[in-house]
Length: 214
Image (tube, rainbow, N blue to C red; front, side, top):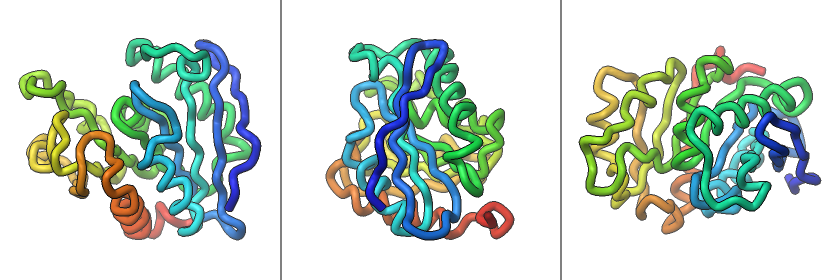
């Protein structure tokens, strides 16, 4: 279950980098995760899933967006993020995506996954620390992005997340079948990464049989 050499992928925004963590045996599905606007793929929650996913039979692809690979500190506009993300998925689909495709990410990466899931035919979406609104600005809601998701959706939210706590996310999901898992900690989700991984693996195991079938 050790990662291989990262794969560089050309995109219209410059090269991206993909880190693949795969199980030793059969692959039940592929979980593709993006990072947030302020960090990379080495965040506590993504690192936990890179270990827990393969242990549960899922391949995990961690995607470094082009702006991050280039060493820039500020992420581009959402449409440009989506463009780079889509180019990566197109490049790895034929050989690195096996079984059902679940898209996800943390914070800004979760937003990208929500916006692109339907076009990519995702079987599910995992939103880690979804930034429902800027801190102290609940009127600036991004709930509409959650409602774009037509596949099964899990939001893993820190209990003290200043960008919107679990109760706020549940309220924002009114009318949507998405689920919310509350875990200890704030927006960084680094207080209890194991809880993040446990909630995710449990949810993956509950996906409909038709989704989980390889």
